Image 1 (spheres, one colour):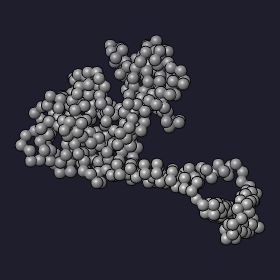
Image 2 (spheres, rainbow, N blue to C red; image 1 turned 90 degrees about the horizontal axis):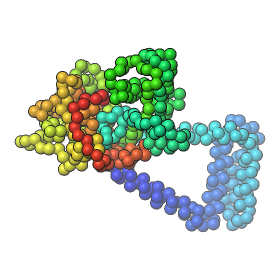
Image 3 (cartoon, one colour; image 1 turned 180 degrees about the vertical axis):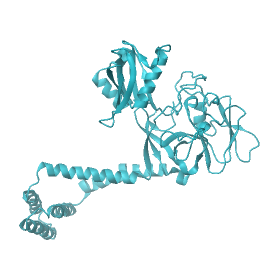
Image 4 (cartoon, rainbow, N blue to C red; image 1 turned 135 degrees about the vertical axis):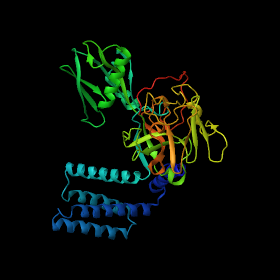
Length: 435
C-alpha cells in the first residue's frame, strides 16, 4: 500500500503536473489561451466581490458585477488579440482601484490561506501517517533516542555557525557548564518558551544554571556525568570548578509511522512497531510512562519464545522445536546478533535486580495467546519491553515505522536499513536505565 501511494505521488509530481504546466503555457492555442485568461479575470472579479461585498458600497458592488458582465461579452469575441489584452490589463487596474486593500489585508489573507492549507494537510495526514519522536535509547542503534554525548572543552565550545548547522542537520544542542559555587542540587525546572528549544533551570546552592533539554533528560545526563567522573563523591553535592555538563544533547530520531499498514497486512516478525500503552502495566501494577512506545515485534499469537546465548528462538504453532529467529526472518535480526556498532543481542534480565518477569533465563519460555504480541527493544540491555510488562494486545498497535525525516544522520531515510558500524560491542552485565 505504501509503495502504491509513493508511485502515485511520483507520477503526479513528476509527470502529470509538469505536463499540465507545459500544455497550458506553450501548447495551448492562442484563442484558448485568451479564453483561459478571461476566465481567470472573471474568477478574480467574482472572488473579490464574494470576499469584500459586505464592506464595499452599493456603487462599488455594481461596478464589480458590471466588470464581470463585460468579461462575458468579450469572451464572445476573441478575434481581436490587442483589444483582448488591453481589456484584461485595464480591468485588472480597475479591480485594484476599487477600495484598494492595504498590506495588512494581504497579510491576513495569506495567514488564512496558510491556516486552511495546514488544517487540510493535517486532517488528511492524521488517518494515514503519524509523526513520532524517539524519546529514549531502547531501540539504539537502529533508532536513536534523546541522548547526551560528553566531549572535551574544545569540541563543546563551537562557534555560532557550527552550532546552527549541527542543530539543523544532527539535532545537537551544545552546553559547557562549570560549577561556580559549592552547594547541593535544590531543584530543576523545565522552561519551554519557543517550544522547539526546551531548557532546564538547575539551582545548585545559590547559583542558577541553564542546560538544554527537559528536566528528566537533564537530570539523567547530569547523574551519568557525575557517576563517570566523580563516582566517589556525594551525588547531590557539587564543588566549585567541577564540570556539571560538557557536551551536546541530541534530540532523538523523528520519523513517520504508517497508520494504515496493518489494516491491509498482518503484523510480522521484525516489524518496528508503534503501540499505545493503554491498559499495559508493569510487575508492580504501575502504568507505563508515556502514551506511545516503539519496539521491534518479535512474537506473534501462538508463538513460544525464549532467549538463549543472546539470541531469540521461536516455536511457531505446529512446530515441534525452537528455531533461531535470524536473517531469514528479517535482516535486522542478523544485525542485532552481530555484536558490532552498538548491537549486543538479546539479554535475559535478572529479576533480582530489575522488575523483569519473562524470559529471565535461557530455559524460561513464554507462550502468546490469541491477539497477543511480544515486543523487544534492539538495545536489549537498556530497554523496558515485554520482558517486563508482558504482551501488547492487537488493539493497541498503531502502525509501522517507515521513514526517519530528521535529523539528517546516517539513519535518515527508510527505517531499519542501516548496517552496524564496524566496531565491536561485547555484551555487558550493566543494567543501565530502562525505558
